[in-house]
Length: 90
Image (cartoon, rainbow, N blue to C red):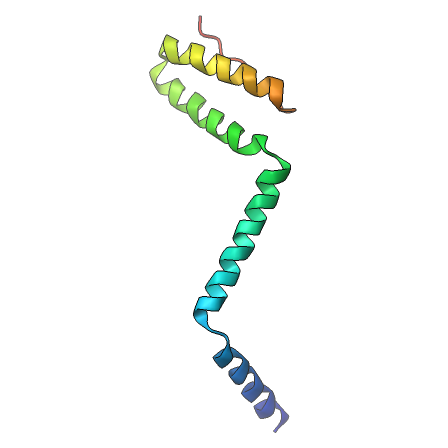
């Protein structure tokens, strides 16, 4: 009898929770987590972008893009604590 009463309560609770509200809450939690992650470490997204550019440079080995990447890596190394190794364009 008690199990039936508890299950009825849960059914009523879930009936009151709207799917749209649940999605909004989940989306809000995701945004807060992203803000905390990137707010504390602003260099993280910049490092990911640089790593992606270095990866694409490995396929072309274009000397002009290498010099551009070296400049970006130098500016990153000046701003952020973690360091990225400078490319050898020679």
